[in-house]
Length: 85
Image 1: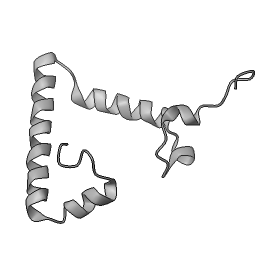
Image 2: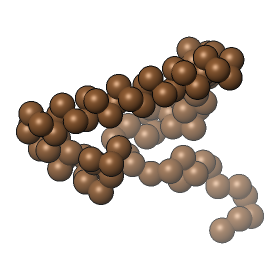
Image 3: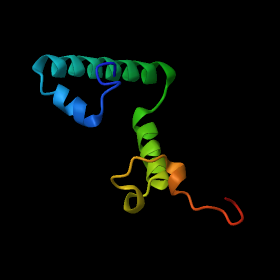
Image 4: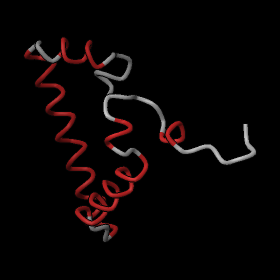
């Protein structure tokens, strides 16, 4: 979202304490959701199925016991193959 694009998580949380900023964020989130729902309806995408499939994929790429609280890309958590650097 444009309002938070260049902010850290901490800066975003501080910004959301401002009522006007929070209201703007709520409107933007609603716009995004409505766009997604219309897109799925038009294209025949089952949003619930796609969401659960993505969550399953992410759980394999980012195992909780290894990744919790870490911001790295999933490739950092892959075991290195023998004979590679």
